[in-house]
Length: 415
Image (cartoon, one colour):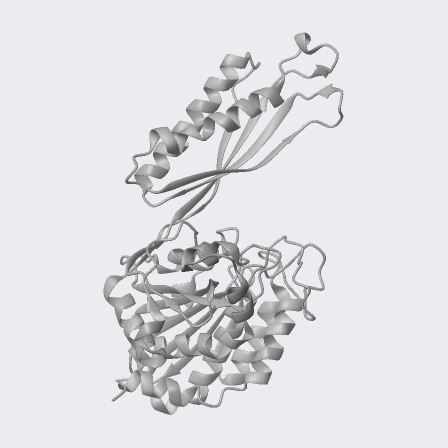
């Protein structure tokens, strides 16, 4: 016998308006909006929530949306979806491709908003089957690591009840129909670091009268690769990526500065601090060796926290997902090096609130089957991933993605 929460979830999602959800997804995909500019997306979500009977607030933390549905005694459950797109030029060739040049929903947040909308409407329509309070959050600016913290700072839990549990999910590559749960650490911390190398510019014909910051930056990029390989223990997981180098204006001008933008991924605060210190030390050393006229500027920028699932919460959600979709669809991939700002929503003066964050695989079957490789990881590396201009989730995941949220919420709201 299927337990009550799973059975109720299947009942409430048995007749989802699939064509309408597909239309919503295509509309969101056509109209992507960058971080903290999600005005159209937020307005559409707010209107759907109001129509479904939620008390709705807009402009929370900038462009955030919160819907609240009080439905008798019981726990408060928060469901969250991020709304922002990326500065990526779409290359999917889809008939509903982005209509905004250089902006694309390349990370699946359009799918997340569609899932959240479908779940919110299904739970509102089926409120006779559960009791408690439901908070539905459309979060801005996940891609920049700002949105969750901005919503919290804007009095999210002063204006609305403090949740007893928080739930969120993310679309990822993989054969559609799998649900990845990792009790404990599931996503890593991410930190952006910017370095400015100061040289002394001049004419390309007289390099001896200059201090060339381009050469110094090149040495620095190479030397930074030793931070992980020679300063971090093999048992630790860490990644350092130089994502951008900028210098100069013309072929025969030696510039006066060079800029390096890099990102580090870590799974502990101790390793993060060690890497930041090493980056500063190496940058200073290379610039001193080159005779730069001043020390480099090293600035620590956007930082994402680690995402650490509460063990019991995640086991509970994984169990109900197994009951709804079958035990064979649930897997534990272990911690990913990707990052999220969702954990900021779980920070509260009374201590960290429990949450479960999981992945929903979404690669179309024809794309997955055509991918080269002999095992799961080979194919995983070959198919378009999040942030790729070719990232195009399978619309067959619309209904399952609604069911994951509905069943997760009902595992607390069905008594």
